[in-house]
Image 1 (cartoon, rainbow, N blue to C red):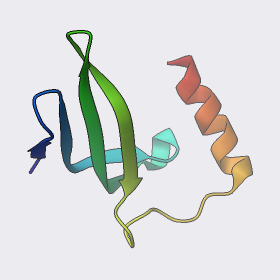
Image 2: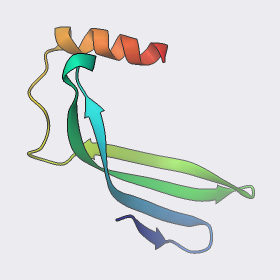
Image 3: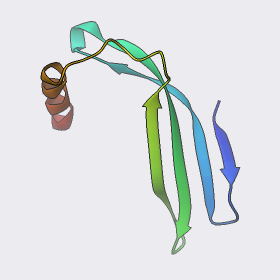
Image 4: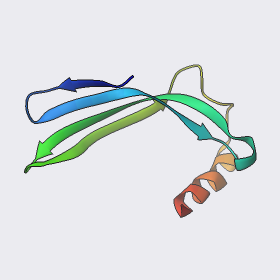
Length: 79
């Protein structure tokens, strides 16, 4: 469930949980993760001023080497 905390009339923090898929296309694995977004109203428009996302400790997929991760990252940039 998402959580929203107001910080006055011009800022709020939204946090929660989500699941994303990672790994090669033929061996995708779900990873439970948490997120937070800090929003602030600047000149009348809401802007994200901070974002954090990370896997829930103890639930990350197997260790991946830089050599394995580089082609996956490059493929993601093409999308």
